[in-house]
Image (cartoon, rainbow, N blue to C red; front, top):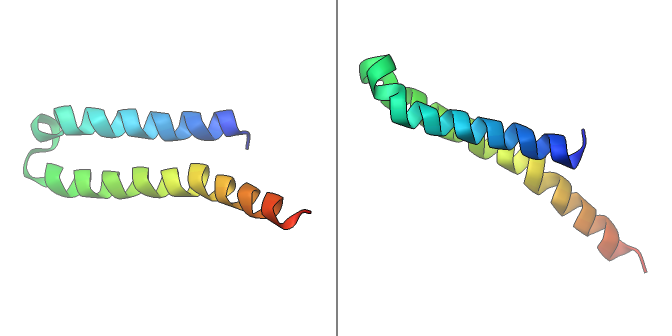
Length: 66
């Protein structure tokens, strides 16, 4: 997966999470808090897995080369 596609996935998840925060209380009622907690976990995990991990492995590979 290209870096642009990974960024697009994370940006889409972040926008969806923001929409959930804005409209979630009206749409989901009392369960909105649980859904938003799960949403923040999903967005954070996607950010770490799709953006931070590839960046960290590239940096590690570059440092080992002379």
